[in-house]
Image 1: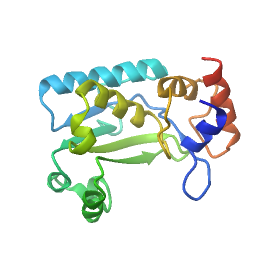
Image 2: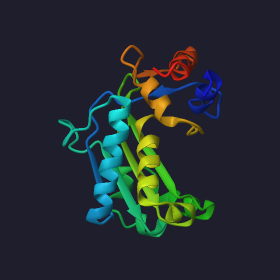
Image 3: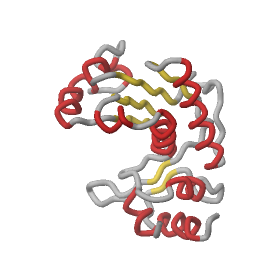
Length: 191
């Protein structure tokens, strides 16, 4: 991946650059899967977090769980999540649009005052291409998607981008597009 690819991955539709990664250890909780699938998901989260050099935790001291992942058969089932609009403001009204678009995922992130990721809530609907993916591939792709606030998830070696983006000398959040050059240089050198 080139620095231009990295920049594109964090460029919002209005043309502005916004990068954010987790500062807090990630404390996940998963709903809607059996124990075997849960083990696969936790294994993928552990593998991806380890590759990025970022810790997982059992709980977040302020929030309990700071990463919630909900699996459902369809968007109507997501509508049955208790206090859905309290969890993600406006989510109930968003469901018909997601269903009409044939979306398979929706991710909502909350941010620290400085822009680092504070929490993430992910809804995964097991239809279409998502339903055809193996549990391990789906879990790994989802874990990679949740590690950074991507504007557009990149194609290519995402694991190397994650490792570069979590370099301790880089900021947890920035709106400076020069940051993409710094991440891209690390990806190119395998750092």
